[in-house]
Image 1 (tube, rainbow, N blue to C red):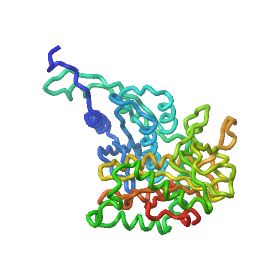
Image 2 (image 1 turned 30 degrees about the vertical axis):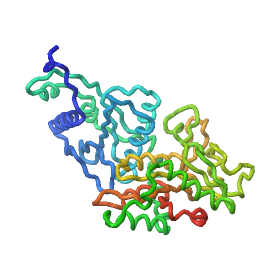
Image 3 (image 1 turned 90 degrees about the vertical axis):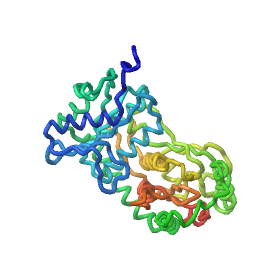
Image 4 (image 1 turned 60 degrees about the vertical axis):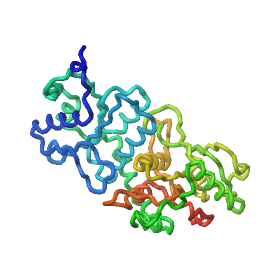
Length: 377
């Protein structure tokens, strides 16, 4: 086969353009190619209004070259959570994968959480003067699905209500704390006014060592510090799996009044969901850290961080019952995100990323503000 006859792959942009054209020809009320939903950081790829009172948001992921990892899946779920909590649970969320995803466990979680899920077969077409004309005749599953007038899943209706309420409570509880107000002011300041707060630290491992030394320096009085704690999350409930799943965090700050038989410096302690309730009630804290650099894709980092907080903030009751129920953890959860620099959002909304983290349950804090009093507050 000559080079000019080799099959040409359809890009994500070409796919979106063709689906958009299909839908616009179907006389739907509205099809927005580049939506801008107010206060939503991670916008869908398409926003469609098939008829009055119905809105469909479409997220498209290309998995032809790289399969979805759990980290990528959590990024996609954070987009879903943000859409449902901020824009409204009435919006139907569709996930379209370009190509075939090989991990059935990941696919199972995404299929259960999104209102609708579709995998597109991505044919190749021979190079011609106008290959779009050939792609135009291909019948896309997404186009056909949206014509059927989709609706949100009733299964998660109460869950999205719980998540919206949790976001409101987190924001009210943490936003006025001094270390978060400082973070907000720093995020809103002129980017040219200051460099990184710790320019002599060139690698994340150095920063991790500094944080550990700072935590252990005041741990002898009231706290013990544990490395790489594992905390049970609700992935098994949301994904319909038969076993428990755990997230690993960087540090756990444990009051001496609780479980004094644990030794400071102990590696990899495990916290079940039942342990977590008492742990937070007695003043325990979970810490995650990140050395921020100007080349870091911070939006990706924050998406993963936010969904991890959401997944550990619920309890599952009657796990073995036919219809187990989900409840928010009682009281505040002390989750600290320790960083070396201010977390800045886009120029038009510089404090947006900090506010997103606070809504998810994290307290972003500068390394220089770490003290025992922070955990007591």
